[in-house]
Length: 117
Length: 113
Image 1 (cartoon, rainbow over the protein chains, first blue to last red):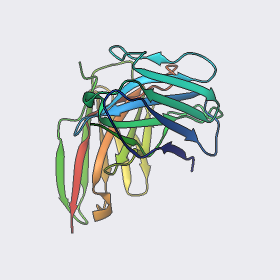
Image 2: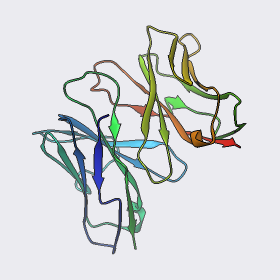
Image 3: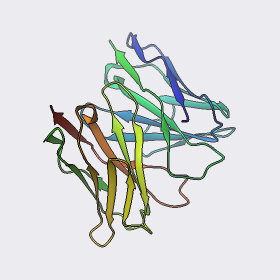
């Protein structure tokens, strides 16, 4: 089946630094990727929709300057958490849909655990 | 306002028995529903989906039922296996919305050997 890979799976950083998380579709092309954040024992909250070649669409309440998204190619989207603070510590998950198949199925990455000290 | 709700945060079932996970939604525009399974520290894995034109979809041990009038769907796992222990999320989307999904809060299923 389709595979989406995230890197890194775990990252620990100091407060004030920036962290980049990559999301790659390995065997398909995705014009749209989605970034989610999950707090412990809570649902996946959609943060933004990443569109290849154009600006990302952010959900209400998500700071664009805080969470920079770049969808530079049909197989790669990046999420950069800028000037990270401890409250940014969370599990970040990306998902992608194969551009050739208009189904509801999204393929998810393995997730990235961010811990800000 | 939670548009997709999973009111049971946890469920324990004996191995071999049926697991029934429930999900309710409020947005009548939703017309496509999916179930995902998630292990700790991993991304969700797609299990099964159903379109609003159907009321049942079956795939092996997994069956999803949709009751549009009640805005309710359920996932049945028969027979349950210990490897099914995970968090199950239901999700819903609206046609033409680039398939953005709205997720429920998840139900932790534990299948006891």
